[in-house]
Length: 624
Image 1 (cartoon, rainbow, N blue to C red):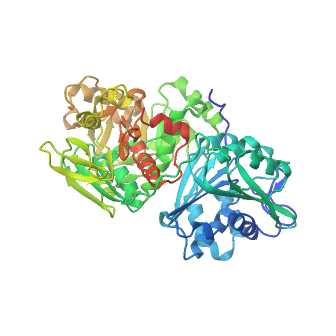
Image 2 (image 1 turned 135 degrees about the vertical axis):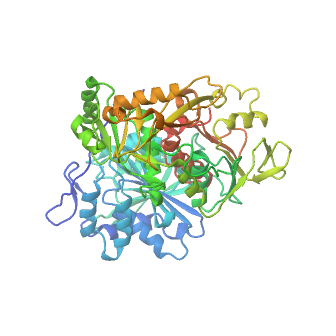
């Protein structure tokens, strides 16, 4: 049974008489009066034998309960920066039920962070996410440090985390005031995330805390405390028996070389994510991704969805939108990626009130989504809309071809022309991709099929669709044709994406994109007059004044295929009986939503990083 939705309730700055940050909700201070940085160094770093334990390692992962003001995280980051023998990458996952909004956190860090730490504080604030439930990955220090913020109640969030923690910072408010953060069930949930030899430390020394850690498989000891406390607690994970579902630490790949089949939105997203982590990537595409600029699918929209009680599909599209905005920041220039916003128009007058009521329940911040009347929607669009709805300030208009070119231009990526006919195991391990004549196009330890509707065919021709596999959701994929209509843009309207039953995009290269059709059982993907008529009908329902100015003789169009799986969700995962062979395909109508997120899921899995998505959502898009 799915848990009842609980809105995220932010914290607000408050202080004790002595100036120590304080939580009125829990009646407790955020750190000892003697100083947050000193407390972090004494309790959490020294209590976990840091920095010594990360030396000589490629990666080190810390799991923290209670992000608070972020001062413990900054102290950890500072120690990592200052250590010449530091690990290659530092990953931190921090659970926080009541985060601060960016402006409030900025106010607190301005007075609480040491003067020499402005660079770190500025990076943290620049990447700080909107206060939305779920996981938010922040890439800091050039990607060498990652912070995954898990916003939500710990008892709900922790069971959904997927990571292998080397150290735990247990930093909730007092056990007497915040018992849920110290319960035996939560400690057992954290233990499932523990890598072999994991340690834990906390300023708390209550008997109930020590007993909870012991019940979870930790060996516990007391040490001298900090800030007037006689004792603190340190622990080492040492379970008596192997436990099912324990965290698995994958071995670091001996040679970071991957072959990605497909140079479209899916393939470029995977290749880019791997290249950012230092992988060498060979991308294969029948046309080498070199379609002439300005032709074909000239522009598309990325807009999240809303759902009552924040249903899983809405959480997935939100995660995809957030990841895309972070990954595509270098190209957020208004040309390749334009953060123009999206008016999501209600489909009927009666639906407007329902959409607004849903926002009240969800409690999402206005920087993510806000209700709009017809007048407000029209002002945002720069032309009259049919009705109101909601506005997503972060809605994107994207030029897919230009974006793919930019992603594939990243260092470490080689683009090759070639049509894959089969995937075959390579002698000595890994895989080969061969063409119809048997010539090897590329080979590597990892192969990722990101070639949309051709991926099931390729697997089938390679012998991976036999008994026990053919009933997999992936092999039930359908191709559905779709058409967009291009209209000459005589003005700059609409100024934002306008969506509802269909969509209209702001002008690109003198054209407005209106879409799109869904044609089942089509023999070919072709732009037709019937398709144009359907799209123009959508335009009339969204923006009637613009529709009235359309000149039929100036209409152009483009058509393509969607690769659609049952449930309209992609498959992103490794084949269960073929280590190193991955699929990232079946993106349906939301290729832009899945591109960056899927890339990070694949890359994080291969690198042994904390996963950027909750466990229940990973299962929804996994291989099955």
